[in-house]
Length: 392
Ligand SMILES: Cc1ncc(COP(=O)(O)O)c(C=O)c1O
Image (cartoon, rainbow, N blue to C red; front, side, top):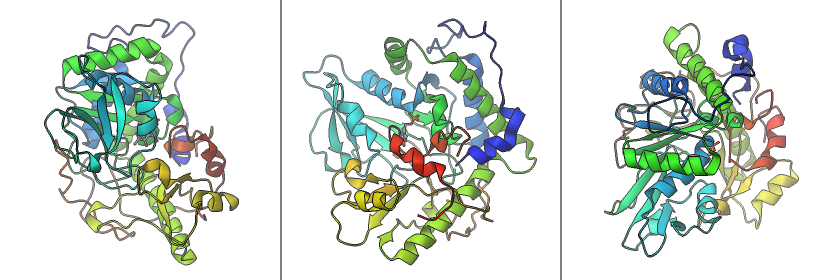
């Protein structure tokens, strides 16, 4: 989806790395995360400042090989070492389908998947993963368990202006972001965590040290360059910013998808209250007729999706992806910090007017890298993404 923008950027986003550069494991930085490239740290802080979507003051930045690695690092860091049993990991259904498998695939003695946070009744420590806006349904989320002995990890992969209005900087103890969803560069494999507590940041860093002895310097330098181009596009205000451009692409795709879904009479899509409208990079599609395996039916029509059953109990819907549409839409702008104007856009969605309550407790690229869309590990979707056209 983001490929068009980056192709237009051409030389502006190019970097050259000489053979002698970035050879060491170390970065020479002085913060907790010893393998973080200083340049990347600066661009992360700048981008959040420009966009206004997260507080970075008083936070340690921990860089990871995608936010996937950081999710595991956070689980490792937050799990008590002296507990008699693994800490429970929860998320309110429907949840990002990888959380369950990530939590359980190594059968860790530190943590284990506990399922739907809404149904958690046990006492005792837990880690809640809060995704906002949520994958797969796009809703704004807050923590639902709210008990003592709980840790909350805020997965803010989609808290960017092309997806949702940014009305307040996220101010959490531990937030995760990723280049795959912010700029579309899933293939760079780069994510970052903003961590308040130094000891937690140190443990996350240790996890990554044990896991991959740091994060590719080439990826960090390329990510820094990409972020600089995005921040510049916001600050220079010549033409459209990265976010304005891609918001329009998303709006256009959603228009086409909604039209097709409505015409079919066979499916429905979530509706959002005007104040919370989001244009996320995938669709939470419900089959409105009796069907055993909607994923299979859609596959027979060359539409690749992931069955709702992967997203938690009672999730009978299907997740698919709207594809790149033809011409650009004329939606209201999404922008850099506070660019929203409180009006209703052409999707019937109003901008969120200070209602984010995002304080603590709230909770086709040339290389066809997926443009950051969809599920990590959902590789079979690639063939769909290569096709142009907005029809399902
Ligand atoms: C909510 C959410 N978190 C994390 C990830 C993982 O992203 P990555 O490992 O590319 O940073 C994804 C990818 O689909 C996601 O949707």
